[in-house]
Image (cartoon, rainbow, N blue to C red; front, top):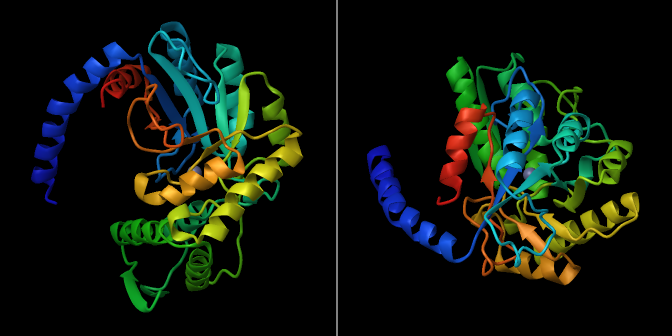
Length: 329
Ligand SMILES: [Zn+2]
């Protein structure tokens, strides 16, 4: 779709959706669920996952002053006013080290959805490794060819913009790969840079088990599951999906000594999970699941596809403006 056609469609949708959603909100006060990933300051953040501690503090104080704040796992049926819910995905160490003190200080509860595969390993998610290999000055051959399924794909790496293009396309390929193909691609990408295995830094590590326990012991924090390997569920067989859900739930329960009742889908758009994933969530014992597309949660919203709005590193004036849009978008 061209950009102009996209803009026209976007404006048309806004013209229809905004008044309709406003009317619906007046009948049933919605819950707006926000999703964060990291609270820290990074030198490089191509995925725009980090919110600075200062911006996060201001955002939380504003929410606390302006809205009722509900917990993700609660029953929202009796919510009498429009309310906000704060969630985190992935399980970064900064959730425990930087986000938690701010949440405690502001008195805002949050639910942290954690991928268990990297917890306690000091390892990073694959997208940070790609960032280090492709974007951060590593010497690379001028042309890179990777086996992608049965095809060969080639990228040039001779300039910053070419490397950015290679990075974007590699992220896309790996997001859409099952676990085996993704590991195969990662190994090929490592080999092109002369790296044999993961060489994690400290900046992007996930929580240790101790940090996770500390986070879970706060009365302001709830821990939910986010699979083991952070793989797109729609690429997996039924058995592999079930294993991702059950194992992450069980590992969290073993570490924390309490039931894990809620879940969020990796990547979380409608194409990233299936009706089968939803059925499996229910079967393994989750009572709610969070998706990752914008929308308002109402009494009639599917509890296994709760929409969420992604928050970026916005100062207060942009945050308040975006939030106004979240009630109707
Ligand atoms: Zn995630």
